[in-house]
Image (cartoon, rainbow, N blue to C red; front, side, top):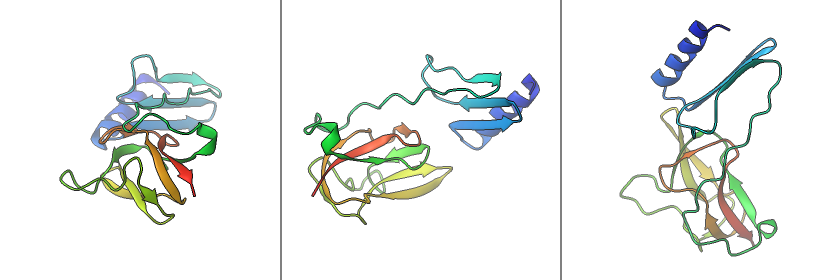
Length: 149
């Protein structure tokens, strides 16, 4: 890939409001990320590469009450923007201390202008909200920690 191709990919990302893009073409691989920390650098190199996992976001709720191994983590199934409620004037779906069931909607992750409801998929009490409202999230990032019941 040459610089012209990479510029076109960046333009595509901006036009479609994408925060991350990864393309493999034979032995070459391009991984681009918008809005990342300056310490994280997009890499372009032939062959396989290791990409560092995203740093955990700041805690929005109380400090962690239980050891992590006793809690179930609800993770983001996609890259997008995390929202605690269906609209800015609505109450949050859940907060630290809220009881959840498997089918309970816990948040929304907006990806490519689509609002995706995220369900708890576990039963218990929310012990920690790990992401602030309207914060960008990565695939697999921990959103909540739940003490199972």
